[in-house]
Length: 263
Image (cartoon, rainbow, N blue to C red; front, side, top):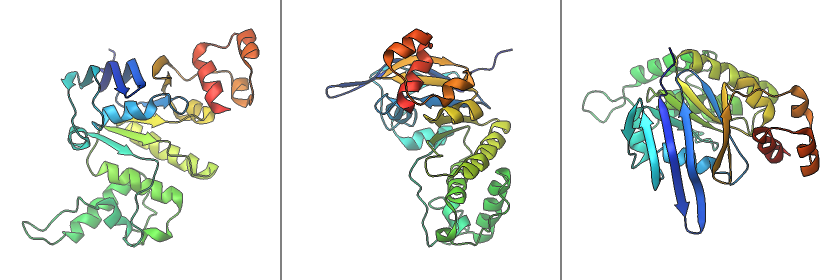
């Protein structure tokens, strides 16, 4: 029995003055999958994500969440539904410790008092990090002393505070070393096993093949294709192409798009 999409976008279009950012774009995301969203700068990735998060409202099309049509007017609505985002820019507060950063702005309170329920906060922060297999992190350590990879984990932990069913990761590997990327991918697989749907924005072919279950490619605001991320390894190693070479090799359109924005 085929799984029902937790999130489905049908014929989404979005226009800015003088620019057609998205035109008739379809997209589907399923529970427990890592779906790569790829495309060159200006392809429409950010606009599509902002439509999903309620930051932008599409002029045409339909957004379905768990089979029900929704109309998101702000990011708070998306968060309440179970859609969380980890943006490329880290938002750590360097002088706060790990637990305080995870719950910043969502601290549990002692009844109706203005006091933070510290024991509960530290306990729940530890439980969230355990879900990510990050028990090595000291909840009392000040964030300024953390590695970039650990800071990335805290950003994901912050997203988990809202108990999301969808997590959007916006190019999370940009500042990470190869070893840190491997660690991040381990945590993504953990979330996937827990049934969370991951929308992963990337343009790196090696990442697409390693972590992605499916890939959707955008180009100039249009959907190029959506398919399994399978490609001959030799294409990943190629660094330069010209139009005649691409045409001669008869590279499928979906990979033509990937080749051009990766060189």
